[in-house]
Length: 519
Image (cartoon, rainbow, N blue to C red; front, top):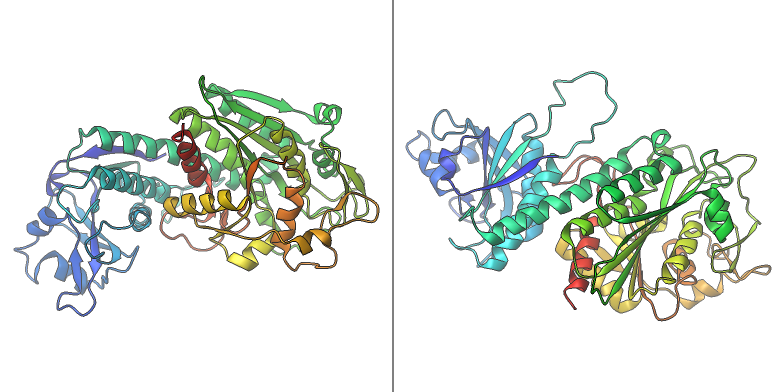
């Protein structure tokens, strides 16, 4: 992973492969580009160059200051670095520091564009003033550091030959700050390193080939990293799951030769008075089972375990950050395959909490394993329960590929939305309508798995309504559907690379820290 450090040396004198500065777009001005604060010494080094200095050089090269736009200029000795890189920040914010997400995306775009460089310095504006406030310094350093590491990320993959068109990621990033010895700046960059390590761990799991990450392997890897972080870990195999009555997890796993698992990871600091439960869907591959999916795009179903990857990785960050709140994660894992032993439409499954569920669609498997895990998590009597899953295609239809859907206790859903906005992982609260639940009444069981009368209508809401049946009364809960934002199949942008995104790890970490601060 890309290493981070702080520097306060004059940017023009930094001995790195590239110095990155920010530029704003200026509509209606004679000068269409404005160099952001921090770039003065670099600009001054170009002032005696023919053609009008750095800003004019960038303009001639086509720079507009658009967000995330990267323009490279050969320094030819003007500064110590051989390359000066301008990254667009959009319109200049009037009397305010740049938004954290603007900085994240700018830093990510820059480090991605500079792949092949060993060392890069980021000289991006943490404030609109020469000396940022403590709040601006902390927020700015966190944002730039997160964007830089995540933008530089590349999955190691399975290629056997090196390629000139695929240079190595940036190895070292130096963040320019007013005072590299600042306690606040050091704390901010340390936290960013912990958070991005968790996101990278999530991305790596999501991007792993599904033949190498079946439930037993995924459970073993999750347990290994959690134990290394000195967390308490329990793994239930198929025999333990059967003995303890996890009917939903077992039913989904029936069709696969790789048996299901459930991983429990606990962080219990002394003196904690609040308890958080995290639950994540871990379908390591989803064919749809007997209700088989179309072949087109099925390969992306290797990402159907992104929720479990996110909650396990969040626990690794929690172990490092040590908030004063108890956090227990549950990651049910299964492979949904079509075979002679697979569960069928029409089956009735007895769930962990005793509910009888009539199966109408084996491709609605995530809610089956999550129902078991949520019911078990509620036995720990959490104050808050956050469940994360790539649950429905309906989420993508309703909210697109970048905004998660949130259902559950209204106040907690709003809290998730706020935390997601701060983290740059947007989410939007959705309802749990009574008419959707009424249509899930079954003639032969307590509840049917889907609302047959609605078919695909309100599909995201059907998933949330089903899961609500397994939440103990009095527990504040939020179901976060990340079917879209957990996996990016398009071109890289900002700090998102193609493949797993790591959403919503940063949101979950923020929520845990926020709740811990309430004590």
